[in-house]
Length: 289
Image (cartoon, rainbow, N blue to C red; front, side):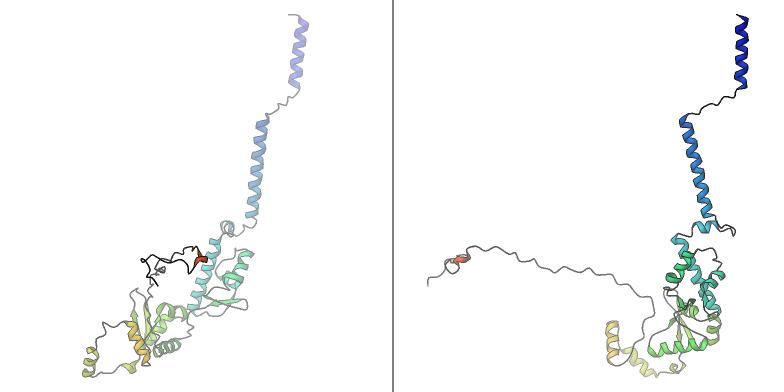
């Protein structure tokens, strides 16, 4: 080969090596790279929104704070705490901020606080809301054992029966101690559903009944008489019967029966203009006038 050509070839290689080459990427490869980059940026921005305030380690709770399950879970925790403190004897009212502080619910947002103030606590039957403060609201407000004894005595005189132990424990602070102190002034009856009912033990009713009167009492049969008829008879005599304190039986709903009998079919009449002229032969030939 010509030596001049060889020299030119060597010079061309040197120039090629000294000049950096930029390789163009395929269009498809570059577009996929852009999509991946955009996805990473989107995830980063959403994470920054949710984790803007994660100094107290409450990331999971804040992520769930918009769900209804979280809201009602907070409400249940607040109501249970208010009930517990009432049973301890702490009956003074608390602000929402004090309740959230004592229940360790410091991570809820403004929307949840607004919902608690305007709807959840304000409309809850177990919460007493007054002037922006809250307390537990039991079925019976009982301060001490004397208040419980007066309530049971009143129920006994009015024929209202007893009071559930659950309601007494809910409304009377330190109820176990008060019930124990009353001793035989009250009595317990266990219902079929295992719930206990408290009654006033009226000692004035504890007297001996003559045996002859007992025989007369037992000789009157009432098995065949309906309870409603017995109650109706007692009302007529001016005697109030004790109301049942047991669980109420749910009667099956009876379906309304459609009125029987078929509707009479109406037929269109013809030849009204010949009334009085035509004669009816459905029962035979009419007699001659």
